[in-house]
Image (cartoon, rainbow, N blue to C red; front, side):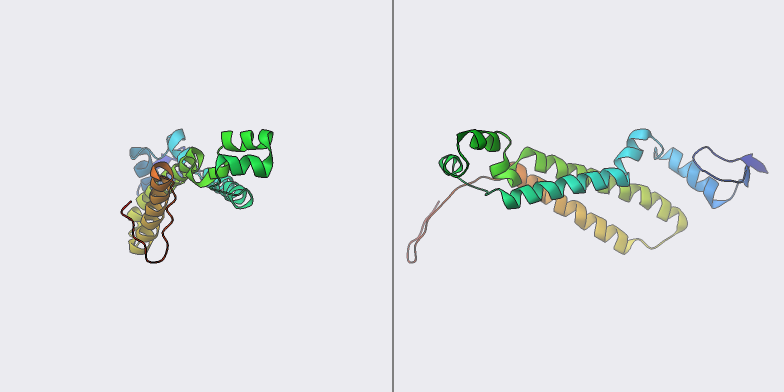
Length: 168
């Protein structure tokens, strides 16, 4: 039995047999909601590249701007006006800022969406998945740990000299 090519498949052939893997793949992807525009955006490589570029830029800023300085040290180092902008934008404590947490959360969602999409396709083909799942699960755990650290970390100083003890 011949059917028209589904709209989610860009094929030069106007007709396909019903039992071809392409048609089965398309039907499975539609049933799982993989064709939804929001899902496609979350699982896109463009989103991944954008988030990675933004994350790298934030890391470069964190490497250039001294981190973990007291407010007085920031004013002494940069002057009043620059210090006000740096502290307002959290650039002197960038690795604990909310936007690092948002970028890591976005990367986690992107990895989960991409992994789920590829997992559906690989399950239909019967491909071995152990290494694939292990790698992507590790990435998600690393991003989750970074997000939790950025949001719940507390900053403090404790000087302990040799031979001293402290219970703080």
